[in-house]
Length: 112
Image 1 (tube, rainbow, N blue to C red):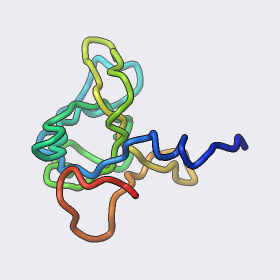
Image 2 (cartoon, rainbow, N blue to C red):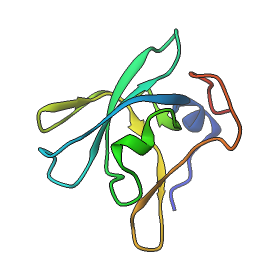
Image 3 (cartoon, rainbow, N blue to C red):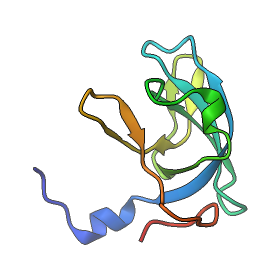
């Protein structure tokens, strides 16, 4: 395990947002869903490609709160530009389970 400083951790900007659109991403090499996530007025709506098809359908994601790193540079994934990294954990089979607050928080709330 690599050790980081507290300042390293604080440089990672993790925010909560609400999924406002979710669509299949058949062009992706690995099964994925294209998301649009609303992070509030200061950050706005950002796009992400997420490999979460084992546990989620696009329809089940609308209105869901997710957590994402919002200060990574955009990344081209096939024909899609992913702007944020939605966070999750691998279950025992390696399928991703989304990370989310267990109570309601405003869009754009920062992980502290």
